[in-house]
Each structure stands twice: as structure tokens, then as C-alpha cells.
Image (cartoon, rainbow, N blue to C red; front, side, top):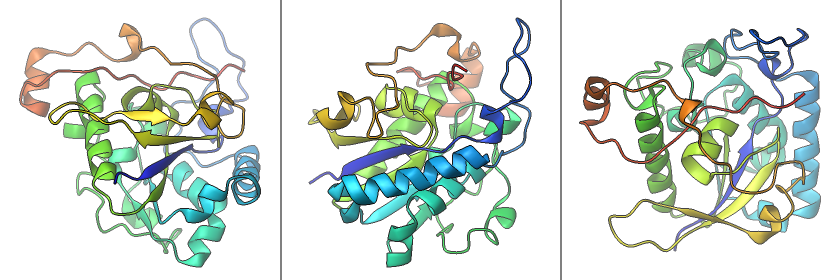
Amino acid sequence: MSPIVILIRHGQALHNASTRKPCLTRPAQEYDIPDPALTELGQEQCRKLEQHLRQHLPLADKIERIITSPMLRTLETTTLGLDWLIKRGVPVEAAALWQENSDKPCDTGSPLSEMKPQFPHFDYSKVDPLWPSKTGPYAFTRTATVARGQSCLRDLQSRKEKVIAVVSHSGFLRCAISFCKYANADYRIFSFQDTEQGRDFELKEWKETEENGGGMGESEKGRADIEDTDFPEEQAEEVKQQLGGKADGEAAREVPEKK
């Protein structure tokens, strides 16, 4: 039987909380901050998430494995938001497949040599040696991101655990995994759809989080459509080099939050 999946977005990070005033040619968000950490508000959001999960979501107590993007803000969110599970001994593995879409500094990870001393209880053994490169399956293209999303779902679907929590990023979750939006440190619950062999993997959101706008009730309701401007235009040769010419499906970058 396929596992139940709890998808969690990281708390607010420094690139989401710029003090600059937005203008027509310059966004308010600081995309040039390398692998940004959580803000104080982001840390508080994660503590609030943990409290909510422990007190209001019995399913969370049944989580048997945690998977997280190896980026700083997701590692911090996992540590703060799922602390009681980690202390209990629930295994936590870092997976490059769950990183954010774009190749901007804020969406490019740090070397594992920098992360391991800060988060020593995580399992990094399965992190792709390409990390933190934004090439191949991690390239900032629609084709590569969609294929990466399917790799994530294929991996989850094959797991033996009954309940798995994943900590990732809004752009990747929205566009390649679940097609809905996530507020900072909010979560949604999914089961796998029954699909014919050879078809793409699909998730079906539980009504509890779909109708509530996420488990915390802070996320936008409804399906998030993908826009053509979400990715750089792909060239045929680039697609061929990345994925053998296969170019099906769609994905997109993270949509900046409204301030």
C-alpha cells in the first residue's frame, strides 16, 4: 500500500523577508542571498507548526520517516518543526530531489561539509553527488523539474512506511508535486491516486487540508495553475542533454508571496 504523505513548506527565510521597498524593476524579495536561513519569524512559525501537529493532528504521531531538502531553511524547519519525532528516533534523510526549482543564489544549496556539523543527526548518505549543482535533473527548466517531481513521487510510492513527512519548498511542491500553494510552515496531507501502469504518479489531497487552506489554514485554496513565464525558454538541445529529449509535463518557479 502506498504511504500517506504530509508535505510541509519551510518557515519564512531571509530571502522572503527583505526590508527593501518593492519597485517596478526590483522585487522586494532578496533572491541573491545564498542558501538563506530562517528569520526569527520563520523559527516561530516552525515552533507553532510543531505545537499544532502534536496537539491537533494525530496522524503526525504516526510519521515513520522524514525526508527533507538539504537546504538550510528546510533543515532548520525540520529540526524545529518535527523536533519531537527526531528525538523519538524517527529517521531523517536529506534528499537533493526535494530542493527548490530556480538556480538563483537563494535556491542553491550549500556544500554538505557545511551542513553536517550543524545538523549531525540527519542521514546524508543518499544525497546525490551532484549536490548542490543546478545541472542535469536539477536544472532550472520545466522539463527537468517535472521529471524530478515524478522521481520524488516514484520514490515515495515505493516506500514501506505508512506515513511519511517531507519538508520542501513552495515552488517545487506547487508545480511538480501537488499543484497547490503553501504558506510558510504550513502543510497538506495527500494519498496516492490509483493510476494505470506507465502513467504519471499523482497525489490526491485530503479534504481536511484542501478545504481548510492547508493544515494551519494559512495557505491559498484551490489549484495553482502554471504560467508559461515561470521558467526560462528551453532549447531542444538542452532538453536532449538533460533528459534524453523527453519533454512532457509542466513545472514552475516559486511564486513570490504577497506582502
